[in-house]
Figure 1: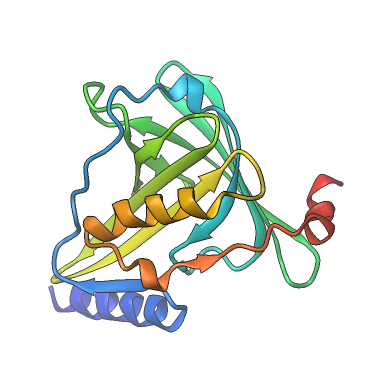
Figure 2: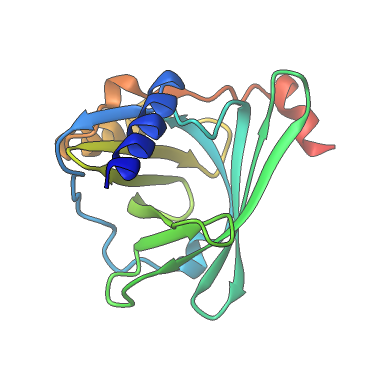
Length: 190
């Protein structure tokens, strides 16, 4: 048990040093999108804002979802790094309970534990609000993304989505905007 505690503390220290958002207490359990339809969710989404993570360091972030197999969504996340290279990762997502299809788990590496990918709100054509959380003893690491089908989002929509997160206990003041400037992000189209 002592080795596990040391490894957990080491992991938490690395994550904290990389601006991951930690909260004392249990992961929130916000309500998810009712009657979520993964088929309508497929396609490309632009990252508008997010809680900082240890695994995303770039700008121009996009997530492209595809129909991988029955009940499984293919995931392709891409971002432009500061040195001009494109970082991408491929994974898959699936609902753990078919009666709650908006609560998905996403995996990127064989053998690694999946992470929560809960769709809290989407209209399928304009916005999506995603939340995830990992529990580490008495501390939770929160993840959240506000996505749009376009590289921009109306301020009113952004404020509404942040309000949903805040009411669930998510630290929206820690969210950071993703630069989706057309000139900067043109490199993503090459």
